[in-house]
Image (cartoon, rainbow, N blue to C red; front, side):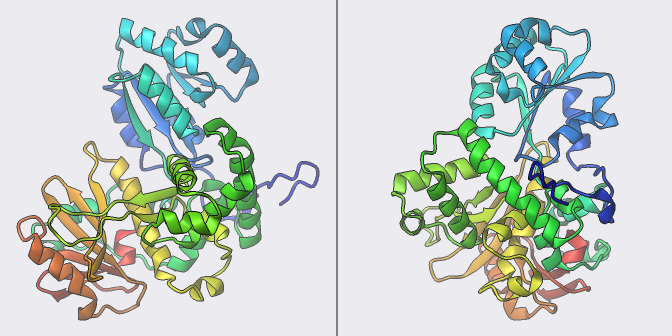
Length: 430
């Protein structure tokens, strides 16, 4: 509902079938890191659930919680940071970037006594936060990113990740012997819903649109002032919308800047702001040698599909179906799932795309140590052998590192398409 006095969107939890509290995939990882590292820092876009995460029973027990959103606490942090952080209990500080001097005091306290789990810090303004921490807590902290909810987190099925099973499978037969169970879902509805908890809990399209509108307004009018000097907010908003309209495409900064009516250097700087705010993801190309004729431009994706579709002016399945290439939003959904999974790993795998100068392309390539897993994403309900061409060629070029690839499709059965390509249902992975 809409509060007519304040203009704020109030989410009515009872309208949704989802639980009000979502157990996050990152939770058990944070617990493990706190057992070994003196400072754990959780960053992420605004409204991804960082405050809820650090206050849940598993992370919040035996810890003293403080939020610098409280003006009283913020004043104490700025006037007397030493007294604030010298506590007998482990300390959780929310929105720590609001008091940069606090980080210097945390550094001094850690240097005196490197007790594991002593400080758990969160912050939304990633650019400002990481700059301060990079100078103050180098070698003392580990950083983690809380991204929007995945479908698996919404279902509260986070005990295991099929990506781990795929990467540990030595060949197609190994994976076929124990494929994950399939849960069918409507991927178009999923990308429209996105992963911001308030948007997910809103329960219907109109409330979700109101919330997303408020999110954009807050980001442009408040967060940008914290992150960077952006003189022309209107031009920045225009570039943000145009970037989302290019979702899943190769990034051409000159062309994007021209369409947004800003110069190339401004376009580059503003894209950096969007990336470090987690509102876009720039996917790097995979290549092992520079002699190969491969595309080396970045691809651009949305940090959250619902927000991206909102900025692109798409609000329902019918409008999504009329897009020139609706399948890129499904690619985006799979990419976002991979990014959440990657945060659960101690050594984070690389995630790339692969494309030749002739136009042959693999949507996603996972690099985990020496292992490579190429992933093609198709919105079709039935797989075709022809769809596996790029996967086969990729595996032929990397036979020792990539024994097989997978084609994710909107079906129900796991099927071997070729000697090195396997068709796997979306519902078995997401």
